[in-house]
Image 1 (cartoon, one colour):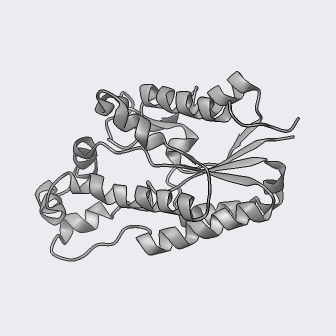
Image 2 (cartoon, one colour):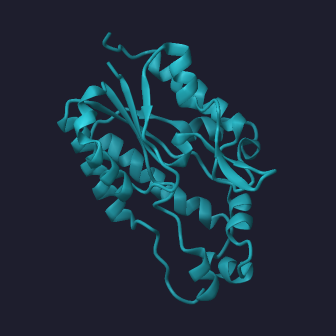
Length: 229
């Protein structure tokens, strides 16, 4: 019996930036791989690069008949939902710009996903969002664009961090309101001596050291859970 299903974006899928080749690739030992090897738990990872909560809802419906196989379904959304069209900001810094998924829509859709998972008899578990490195991320998204215009629109570089933090707070709120277990990934990154060293050049994807930290937290959490045999 499969015991654990995973839905979310590139972080939970184990994607890192290959800085030598300049492209993204899958990490050979992501936390899901390590979890399966160390515990013997069967893990099925449906997460996708660039996935938003809206796309995640569609993906879950696509695999609806499979959901009941899993005792636990881990969900991790928000990193792509809070993203902005930086090219549009670069061209028109004087106008308002919305996130890919406005915050209210993010909360509503995520809430429906939680209900859908529970509806098939599986236990949802949420991931908090790893913090991003605002400095690295600003340099990454402004490549080839008008960085001055983007900065004028932001007000300050750390606004990027605060913007993402709103989406993380929404995840925490959902976990509390709907009484869903939460694995606090963000907390362990913030506790690190220098979490900037745990990120790829793009400032948003944890590097191999970052994924090793995620693995430590996730393995410790699932070691406390009982799985059917």
